[in-house]
Each structure stands twice: as C-alpha cells, then as structure tokens.
Image 1: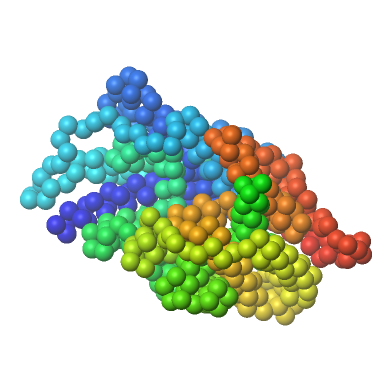
Image 2: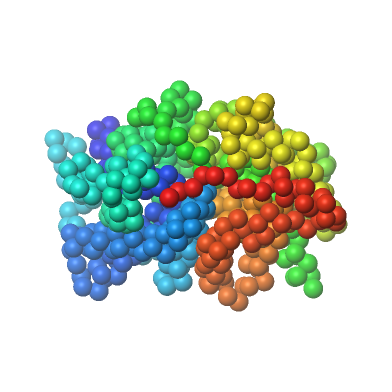
Length: 290
Length: 293
C-alpha cells in the first residue's frame, strides 16, 4: 500500500516536474514567473483532444501532437505578448502581469470555443492496472512517469551538449553578456519558450488524459510554481526534486487526511520548509527584483 | 433601478477589496496571490460573529478585520524577510489553505455550498462612506513620510535601507493595511449579498485584482480606483456579452501594458490643488531602473 502510494506520488510529482522545469527555464532566462505556461498546457491538451477524437489516435501520437502544439503555442505567446514588451525594455513586473493576463485570456478563449464543460479523452490504454510483486500500479501513472522521465533526460542532455542548450544556460547567467558574445538573444528566447512549451504540452496532455479536460486545467501551473520556488528558483534540478516532493506529499495527504484539507497541509509544510531552508532545495539564490 | 444600485454597490465593495492589492503592490511592489483570502476571512468571520455568536454588526466587522490583520502579521513575519517570490508563493498557499479550511469545516461555514442566512446589514450609505474614507486614507498614506518610504523601498530596497528605512517593518505595515482593507470589503460583501462561498475567493480573484490595479496604473490612486471600479462593475453590466467580456478585458490590458506600461493614468492624480498633484507625482515618478534587455 505504501509502495503503491509512493509510486503514485512519484508519477504525479514527475508531471509536476515537467511543469516546474518549463516554468523554471523561462524564469532563468527572463527572470519572471511565467504563469502563461499554464495556458500553454491547457491549449495543447485541447488540441491533443481534438486530434484524438477526429482521427481516433492512440496514446503516443496524441501526446506527441499535444507536445508539439505546446511548443508552437508558447513561441506564439512569446511573440505576441512578451517580445513587444522586451523590445520596449519593460520592467520585470510588467512581464509578470502580462503572463497572468495571458493565462486568463487563453483560459477564456478555451471557454469561448469549448464551453465551461468537462471533456474526457477516449480510453487509450487497455489495462488499467498492472501488478508487480504484489503492488498494483495504474498503467496511466506508469505512462506519466515514463514520459516525464524521458522528457527530463532528453532536456538535460539538450541543455548540456547542444549549442542552443549552452546558449540558454549562458543567457540564464547573464543575458546581456550572452548577447555581447554573439548569441542571437531573440532566437535563444524563442528556443527557451519552445522547449518550455514542449514540456507544457507534454504535461498538459498527460494530465488531460489521466484526469479530465476543462478550461481551468492550466491553473495546475501553480504546482510547477510551488515546486520551482521550493526547489530554489533558477535551479532546474532543485525544481525537479521539489516537484517530486510535492507530488509525494500530496498523494500522502490525500490518502491520510483527504483531498479537502490537502492544500492547507501542503501550505503548512511549505512555510515550514521555507522557514528552515529559505534558499530552497538547491541552495543557490538568484537575486531578482520583480 | 434597484438592479443598477446593487451593481454599483457590488462594484464599490469589490473596489475596496481591490484597493488592498493596490496598497500592497503600489507601495511596496509585493504581489499577493492570496489577497482575496483576506476578503474571505473578513466575510466569514464577520458573518459567523453575527449569525453564530450573536455579536452586533460593528464589533463583528472590527473583529473580522482584526483577525485578518493578525493573520497577515503571522504570514508576513515568516516571509517578508525572504525574496519576493517566496512572499507571492506563501500568500498563494495561504489563500488556498483558507479556502480548503472553509470548504471542509462544513458545520461551521456551510462548506462548498456556501454560508446562507446572513442578515442584510450593509446599507448603501455605509458602502459609499466606507469607499470615500478608504480612498482618503490611502491618499494620505501615500503622500505621508510613511508612503514615501514605502515607494522608496519599492524602487530600490538596498538604497532605502541605507537611508534608514526599516524595510521589513514598512512592508509588514503595508501588508497588514492591505489585509485590513480586503477583509473589511469582505465583511461588507457578506452582509450585502447575505451569502458567502469559498470559491468566490480563489487565487484567480487575487490575480484579477492585480490586473485591475495595473490597468489603471499602480502609481496612480485615481487610475487604480477607476480601473477597479470599472472592471468590478462591468461584468454585471456586460452580462449580454458574458462569454467575451473577460477576453476583451485581457486584450485591453495587454494593449495597455504595451503602449502605456505604467497603466492608463501613469502617475497622474485627480487632485483639488495642482501643487498637491505635482508634489505627489514627483514622489512616485521614475519607475525604477530594472530593465530586461
């Protein structure tokens, strides 16, 4: 029973980790909390749903379409909302306010086109649970875990060994210097949003498939926000650790004290944690002044 | 006629709540993602005081404001020393925790179905007087030494500290003031609509308040007042276009942020004497030097 809960917590945490990493990537480069990440999740989940319904796709193409849709959507959001602001040299607070406005706007566009109702993806996986050594594990949770781990591994490889990955890391350090060294900052930022959007699309479609689809699905982005702040903003590994801790805690609390009080318990743990370790899991502090 | 009065009353009450955000974000630059939770605390504790413990109206309202201020003190004590993101995160967590507790303690609050049977004690004159007093109060706070110290710490915390501003305590005071305003608005709201439910006070509500403040301009009380009054009233008036209205606002706000990033009114204030207006804009001019290249 405990092992089962742990696996479930790990799977939920892995999806939160995807969100947190996408959130953290943009934070690293532009130093603002990008809540529009959530709307990217929502829109890509709906696009995946549309394709899945229309062409009766199985799970792999559905999730792939969702992922790519997320990437494209995030790049468009950056082009429409953040690039003009950046060209005008706006303060960081305006990026933050723009991102929460985009979250509301895109959520509302989903409501306009799809209504305020719940949708369910068609059943995509035949067996609902498999039993390993007496522990019964939901197949969907395993899929979530597998996809997330693969995506995170690919991302970390990409950030470490490709030219664009190095450029993104350089831009996270000092975006102006990165510009002076000849990197095309516009391209770097577009790539950052694209990759963050891929993460958002993947997490959005996974969440849509395993739960239900509703316009407010993008608000799950706050889990990524919590995880990346607890992990130490600016540190992706810390964000992953924070997200998995959050997932396990949530599953544990839901099993013991029920879903209703879970937010209160999570809040208490979070404040305690910030009190004891204000620098976050990773222990590095990024100075910012939003 | 009755309908329009109630829409206006509702807008005015929400505006008082939004001014809580304006005080916090405009003076100290902090973002609270749980400001609406203070409204919930105000609404519920005042309503419970009257309905369950038979308190008179005024003590119940004062008590509810006191509870909100006390909670703000506790949260602020834990998080105002930390980075701003931690503050935003903690207020968010606080808001969701409040909502969770209100939803689960069904016996006391009515749970997700909401609390009904609250007597209708908020009158029109009370709302109007409250709004006027609150606006007068904020305006005086902003031009006082206290307010100028706050704006200074928003623009450059280190410099303000070097000049002898007690940064932590100023932030704390402003946070408590904002909480008091939002809680007061919550109490008025509960006794006006005679109904309260936890989902009226979610974090997206706090987000909406931030957006409203930025539409009018966080350096302009007049702008924030107009912005929040219009945006708090319009949803009711624009019922016929209910599906589109939020989308329209959001586009309006995005355009504003791009063309006039400091809000529609910038730092302009409606004032009775020109000198007064000039002095104030001198205080709040120069929106900082933090640029992203």
